[in-house]
Each structure stands twice: as structure tokens, then as C-alpha cells.
Length: 291
Ligand SMILES: Nc1nc2c(ncn2[C@@H]2O[C@H](COP(=O)(O)OP(=O)(O)OP(=O)(O)O)[C@@H](O)[C@H]2O)c(=O)[nH]1
Image (cartoon, rainbow, N blue to C red; front, side, top):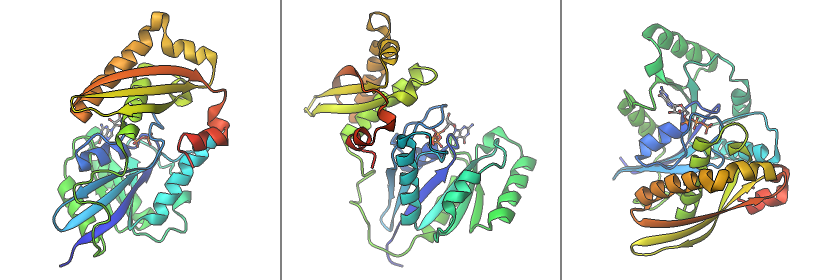
């Protein structure tokens, strides 16, 4: 049999566990994981390679009704990933009700085969798992339904084998040692954003964007500068905190994450900047990489 390769899109509501699954399949922290919804803003590829196959997973932003131009861009990325897919994994959270309307709407007209994942079964019982699997089988008539725990990765071997089986025969799309299409700058900004999601409540994380303005690579040390963009002065004050205490915490943990990820010492400097209502302004969104 020839070499298999293809694109697999993981889609679903915010917090379903899409990033957790992709990171565990790829074996690297590509995508931000937090208990808060809507942490993933860009489509991120995670690539699983072996001698005979290359599966290119795409982690996508959770599907929501758009409230800002930012959300519209996030939803366009979901739509793009559905169009490109050889296989779509629709991820659902076993603890959620069956209100996947927004998600199913996005799938209308899609020609790619569909597989449903019932996730977080570690938080459930056998009877509920059976019911949910039967429900999705009946409702969408997908190619398959898998009940999994993306967090603990029980029973995922059968699932990965199934995905590989489903891929078309095709040469590799990316280098065989590539794990993602994103560069180090992107991951540096995501590691800062992840800390902002961890350290602040309410609207701060959602109003924040991080731009890496300089990235000087060194043999033993990377020097990284970043701007943290917020929408209002009040948010800037909260972000910085008394005597800069909060920003120091963000910087410290982001730096530690970067040092682990890049396997280097990191010198990180950050500046906070206010751009009123950036989430609604197309020119800024474009500049920040949201098409
Ligand atoms: N118990 C349990 N928790 C899980 C599992 N998978 C993911 N989670 C948790 O669910 C939360 C959301 O996970 P993410 O992977 O960030 O979810 P997501 O679908 O990428 O979320 P968005 O970025 O908002 O679209 C995190 O707190 C995860 O630890 C699972 O199998 N079991």
C-alpha cells in the first residue's frame, strides 16, 4: 500500500476539548488549553507523521455566534478548515446538552466524511456514553462515533488507526519532521496569551491580543519582545497591576513555558498598549493576522 496523507479538521463548540486532543495526538503543546471557552483564535495545524502516513490535524476556534469582527474571522477559519478536510471530527462534550445547532449549521454542504467524538467520558458513566453514542449515530449518520477522553487518551489507538485508514493515498504535504505550520514567534505569543487566560478573570483575556515585535534567536538565549494590546485604559491598569505585579507574574510563567518549549534561556520583555475596540476594527485584525 502507498503512502497516506490528508487533512483532518477538529471542530466543535468552545471548551469541547479540541486543543487537548490535538496536542495529545501530536505530543506537543501546540494549542492553548485552559478551562475558559474561546481560547483558540487561529486555526493551528498539528502534524502526526510515520513512515507510511502523515495526518495533518487542524485545531479550530470553538464555534460561536459572532459578536465582533474578531469572531467573524475566527468563524471563517473554521469554515476554511471544513472545506479543506478529508475527514471532519466533530467533537462534543458528553456533559453538554444536545445543543450543537451552530456547529451543525457550519457542516451543511460539507462533502467530507464525518466522525463524531464524544469527549470527556472520564467524567461520565457507561450508560450515558452508550446513549450519547446512539444519539449521534442516529442523528447524523456519521461514518463512526468514538467515545474518548482526550485528556487521558484512553482507547485512542483504535481511533487513530481509523483516521489513518480513512486518509487518501497521497504523498506527504509537509516535511516529515514538521509538527506544525506555525513558527516560533506564533508560539511565543500564544504562551503569553495562555498566561493571560490563566491569570485574569472576566473580559481581560478576551480583550487582549499579543504581538511578538522582536525575536532574536541565540544558541543559548532567545530575546523576545512583545506588545500586549488591550481595548481600554482600565484594562491596561488591571493587566499591569499594582507596581506591575500582575504583569510580572504573566512574564515569569510565560518565560518558563517558553524556556521549556524552545529548550533555551529566554529573555522576555513586554509592553502594554491600548488600541480602542481593536476586536471590531478590520484594519487591526488584519495587521494581527486575522483575515
Ligand atoms: N475531564 C476531561 N476534561 C477534558 C477532556 N478534554 C478536555 N478537557 C478539559 O476541557 C477544557 C477545555 O479544553 P480545550 O482543549 O481547551 O477545549 P477547546 O475545544 O480547544 O476550546 P476552545 O479553544 O474554546 O475552542 C480544559 O480544561 C481541558 O482540560 C477530557 O477528556 N476529560
